[in-house]
Image (cartoon, rainbow, N blue to C red; front, side, top):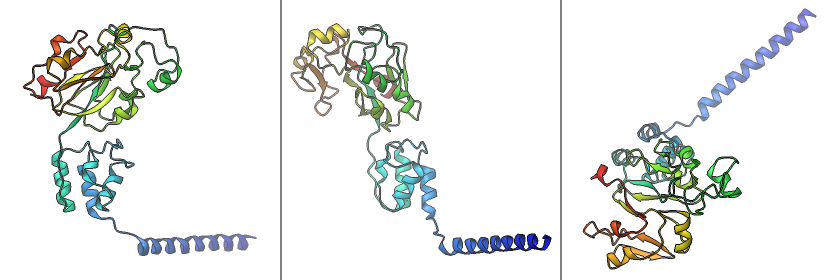
Length: 271
């Protein structure tokens, strides 16, 4: 009996040792050496794994860069200096563009927007959209439950005391995750040199828009007339800034806007 058990143990041990040796040899024989540039490039990337490039993470993005399956500019978070260094490593050219930041197109906070009721469900913007649309009467404004805050990997967006999402333009890396997270499309990405915005998305008729928010654009066209149609255009009851035509030399119609829907963002900090 003892001899039988001993033979069994030795046999299993021998087989285990044999398989270990075979696996080690196969691993050595079949191993694929990783391009050292992948590690070098991965260290230059922000390693936030925000997904704005379309890949699973920064390491995966680095692999695809080295493999020629992606381009450096696909990473909106990476700074221009890092992009230029990565381009030198890959031996390619890179065009560095202007940094982009998120802009929240809503001023309908607690003190400005009409409240239609109390919401007692799951407090996420997405869930609220499918149930009642939130507590505020405007169907185009910020719901304020912070889906964008949860999505931002850089702590660049927060919900203020008014219950509105606000962006820290200095922290914002332009990854765009907040844009994807907002179910109402209230957030847009803009070049950081853009400072003038009509901070509203409401396209209802003026009477309805004004009834739900003190700062809603009412499509009165005062801004468009003030600049002779150069830089401001009203379409579907909503004024928008044409940043291609708009220049700093234009006299801003901000003081003439009856609802103060036109705002200037970040100019003092970035000038």
